[in-house]
Amino acid sequence: SLQDTTVLHNGVKMPWFGLGVWRVEEGDEVISSVKAAIKNGYRSIDTAAVYKNEEGVGEAIRQALEETGLTRADLFITSKVWNSDQGYDSTLEAYEASLKRLGLEYLDLYLIHWPVAGKYKDTWKALEKLYKEDRVRAIGVSNFHVHHLEDLLKDAEIKPMVDQVEYHPQLAQHALRTYCKDQGIQLEAWSPLMQGGLFENEVLKQIAQKHQKTVAQVILRWDLQNEVVTIPKSVKEHRIIENADVFNFELSSEDIAAIDELNKDQRVGADPDNFN
Ligand code: NAD
Image (cartoon, rainbow, N blue to C red; front, side, top):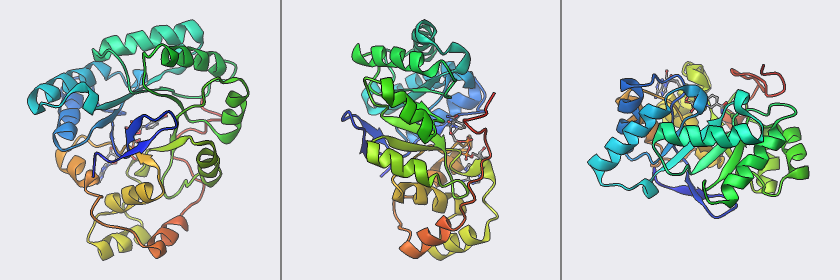
């Protein structure tokens, strides 16, 4: 179900499925989409300081908890430290600022948004401090290639629990997936729907038709069967519901193989080696 979780290497449970809110407007738009998600069973929300909608996410959480009777502990809230805030002291300050905007006492997961060269190790030390002081339930990274993880692990006391990267049928991240699996780092997909760019794909359309599902549902099911956490974004309630309706069918190994063939190692977002 939507509340199924993976268990991170520190024992914390993280939902396999969540709502992403990049490019969702602060105010009414983000409040209504986060509330729609929680009311329809979502428990995980992915935001970031740079999305400039943490206040609305926080407001939506407060309203949803009041209206549903859920508690804060039922939810899994992720945010990320932005590039210009990287470094030890500035990351500690950025965490407090995110919490304040969200109106929360703690986050479930705090991520380094991008591997800013020369800074991400100091940033990681700040995340380790927050974690050791029980200010955050899990810490991780985003947009880290294997070489960034290898470099971080040379000095890290705590291994990242999550790496959130661009991942979809045209960017299957084979090397990173294998590395993360070996290391016990949970892979999480951003832009799982390739920002809308896969809906006319004939292979996906055929598989969708066979299962009486939509292309979006086939892609998101592929994420789950590959043991990748997924956080599709939508602001429309009917799509928020549609995207989450992926727990009642199974892709066959032939379906998976056909989807795997679509890989082109092709990004829609920036390359973590060249994102400035
Ligand atoms: P996505 O791949 O989730 O695609 C979202 C777009 O697809 C929507 O704008 C909508 O137009 C369309 N869509 C969604 N559901 C649909 C459906 N059922 N049918 C038809 N169209 C549908 O794109 P995304 O927002 O880029 O990625 C998801 C989340 O990942 C973000 O919101 C954000 O939280 C996270 N993210 C993180 C990073 C990072 O650097 N860490 C970068 C990008 C995104």
